[in-house]
Every structure is written in C-alpha cells, then in structure tokens.
Image (cartoon, rainbow, N blue to C red; front, side, top):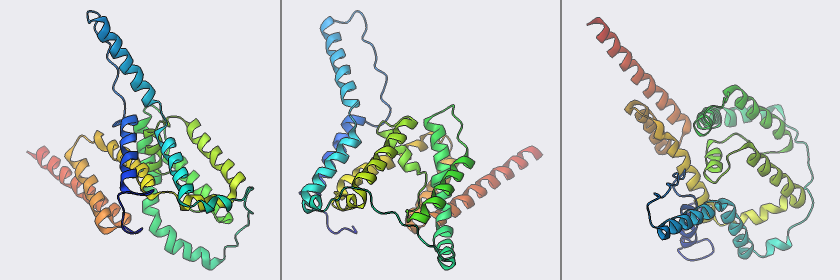
Length: 285
C-alpha cells in the first residue's frame, strides 16, 4: 500500500507475483517432500516405468533453485525497468569511512533504538532462532548465549563503518531452509557472494536494487513467512496455541512487537498460574 496502487499487468504487476508464487509451489511444494513409494512387483511394467519417470521428473523439478531463479528474474526486470542504472554502475569498492559517534548519538541510539528494538531482537534473533534451529536440525546444540554474543559483536563492529543493524533472523533461516539451504556452507557462499558484489560493484548496486520489483520480493518474503509459521505445527496443546495467538494478534493489531511480547508473557503467566491452582486443589482433595 505504501508504494501506491498495484496494477495487475506490468513489470511489477500482480500477475507477475502470482506467476512467481505458482512457480515456487510447483518446485518446492508445501515443505518436506514425501518419501517416494516403490511400486509393487506385481504391477505392470509399463506402469512401473511411468512411475519411475514421474519420480525422476519430480526430482529434477525439486532440485531447481527456485529462489535464485526468481531473484535473477527480478534483477533482469529491474534492469529493464530502469535501463539507465546500467550506465551508472561503477566498478570497484566504495570508500570506507570510520564514523565518529558522539556521546549524544550513543544516548539517542540507546533510548530511541536499543530499548524499542530489544524485545524484537531477543524474540526473533535469539529465542526464535535457537528454537527454529533445534526444530529444523534436531540433535544439534544451539546456545542462546553464543547467538546473543555474535549479534552484539557484529553490531558493535559494524556501527563504526556506518553499517545497518544486523541480527540472526528466524525468517531468514526459515527462508533458506525452505529454498534448500540446509548447511553452513550455504550461508558461507551467500556471505562470499555479497562480499564479491560489494567489492566489484560497491554502492552502485543499490541503484539496481531500487528498481527491483516489489511483487517478486513480496513473494519470496511470503514463502519465508509461511515456512516460519508452519514451524508452530508441533504445538500439541491449546495453552501453547493460545499464548502464540495472543502474542501474534496483539503484535499485528497494535503494530508493536514489544506490546505483543508483554501480552504473551502475561497470558503465559496467567495460564501457568491457573494450572498451578488447579493442581494444588486436586492434591488437597
């Protein structure tokens, strides 16, 4: 809505977004692929051959890097939408300057930035990341302390060079897992690719990204959010679902993650208090 009325047809129209969404559904499906069932030995050979061809075709389609293909499509469309950005591209890294941060800037940043952002960062960058990692990669240990320390370190180092605040996002982890990134090597390759782009194109790449179609970006974020939401399917009690819905609804309606977090804590505490009172009354009987 902030970008104005959305048209159905065009290089950033709704039709393009729907086509990208359909492509992702065809390639990735709803999540983990079901195990292929072997055909029974007494089935006709022609049916077995057709089943093998279908499995082979599904395997080929499933191996396509759907997110990368859509991202490349978005880059091509961005260049078509703004062909002048190609002429404005300058090769070579941008100059690096050390930012001088005054005491007043530290104070304002802490009051206006750190305090409002802290609940969201703790929830999304620490608690949610550790919980999601343990769900996606069972059997591995994920420490909230190490995650918190790395978030703090990269922000303490990056702020002196004008970097935007960074964190470990649960949505990014869910998106990478959704589109096939299942190892640390994927993250290393992503970081290396960003470093190469930064060293080769510098800040001129921002001009290309400014023309990137919002609809294509929205589709990628949509499926990352769906994958993240589907991780709540392991909630096996009404109490857990109730607390989650309270936190989500308040956050969305009030447009405040801090308010949603506070209401979720209150709801969880009241539910636990109610359970405790019920257990005590049962033990007295």
